[in-house]
Image (cartoon, rainbow, N blue to C red):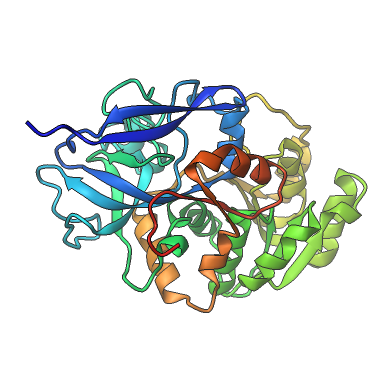
Length: 368
């Protein structure tokens, strides 16, 4: 009898501390697959999770949700990706970290991105089979209700590693914000999501304003299509930030996308949106964090506020193709610092300190 391979996963051992567990690599689920991870990234959400800021991901859960892997084994019936392309062992793929069950009221009402069973798997304890519930490890188990898309041959693994969260998330945000040619779009936050949003919004024909409290992060966004860099550290308070953004956009943006994770930015974003415009909230994911809000002003301006949590799974396919179709953007440089899996704690700290745009964890990438 063959002895199963042993794989490694990094877990949230306790608030502020990572753990490491080993488990036998399981057989693939029917309709799903097991991936050998090539690379994973550190998302701002991972920093929040490490600090106890996620309502479901608790101590004992596997860390990581963004990355790219190679098909290690395929379950019965898993012979193609969600775009209909044939899948074989060894193919590189990107996969959603959440599922759409297609059976809950949200899925059946046309909102699969907020499937009430979305985190069945990702927020599961590492001690529970099939164990490999996140991307920070040697393997990742992808169930039959997860979205999976092949990586085009011309896209490097480093370029693909940010697609299944950062790029797809803001791609959906731009779709939800109805970004179109000639729009003035303000993006709050110049981390990985902000850089990706700059590329998408500019490719859609918008005039893009990237705004950030840490001015050192602004330059990279301009390499990815942002037309204007706004240093919010020049403003003294919320009112000054709103005034600065309105001045830059001649009275307010058509679309404002908040990626900061700072509650006050929610109120700032609504006020920086022109009358009748659209504000997209993505960054604030931690419950029970509050900010003052003027509902009367909101009503009178006619601003629409829309929440973009996760994304419809088809967006992942559009996002990976977007990378292939836009070689003018330096996608490999989005990951601007690389670490081994054993250095994940350091990568998290540098991400928290905003020293890097996107920290990458090299797991098994022969091209690195």
